[in-house]
Image (cartoon, rainbow, N blue to C red; front, top):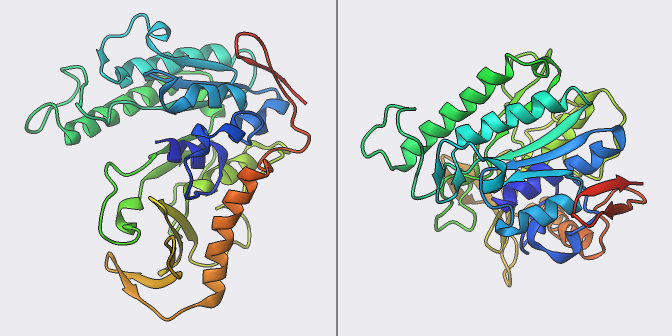
Amino acid sequence: TVRGIEAVFTGYPPSASESVVKRTKSRRGFFTFAQALKPHGYRNYFLYGGDPNFDDMGSFMLGNGIDELIAGKAAYPEAVFRGSWGVSDEDWVRKAHQVFTEAQTKGPFFALMLSTSNHTPWEFPEGRITPVGPAASHDNAIRYADYAIGEFFRLAKTSNYYEDTIFLVVADHDSRVFGADFVPINYFRIPGVLIAPGLTPAREKRIASQIDLLPTILPMLGISVQSAAIGQDLFADGLQGPGRALMQYGNNHALMVGEDVVVHVPQMPAKHFRYQNGALLPADDNPEMKKLALSYLMLANDLYEDQLYKLPESDLTVDSKKKLVSTK
């Protein structure tokens, strides 16, 4: 999940190291959606039904642009259901609607919301869905998550903020990523839905990555926003080609452009494949693509080690309660 947060919230490319959410040099001043919007008067929220200290998420958020954490038991005193991972998704979305309704009266806001329902032991309130088979199952947890997302949009559509808000609903990862391939590409395909005022319904047919979502959304806001993201705006004029994706599987790193895939495995030469019919098939070497794949891998490392993935002259101040109060 922290890999998904890393990609969607920061636009940072994957590396062979741990997610930047858990690393020390990215604790403060690291570029995020929230950092980009804070200079424009946005108030930034992180809403999660579980413990904000899990995977060091809370400290990463507060050090990198989030103003308020709404997470943990105390944030949901009237929860209808509490499970092993925290409050139910319906409690989480109803709280979000309450927060957004109040926030929009004060100015623009950004929120990152993280679901908890799709984890073992598959706990959720009774009577919300019609279970198929044993109630506590992966498939039923998905049905419940879908129910809760629907509940959120039902509430949002009654609000004053709905028509002025861009919504992104995206998976952090597949339900389970495994396989004998160097990178099991079929398990990296995830859904993403973008809902926004005036956006014409369409399906993006090119390959895209989670790191493309932030640079796609920022230009939609109608303001001039500084960004450190290296992804591409999927709506940009002149964007050509089949698209590309970056994937990290253990220590293995892959760049996919159309059906061409280059995989870097530690202590081995780079390998070139064609991805067809769900399988990686050996292909003739493409030196330029191998060089490009290596550059993405090295860039992720260098940006972190040299602490360059940030806005120019970023200067964050944190008060004694660990809430971000200013940025210069």
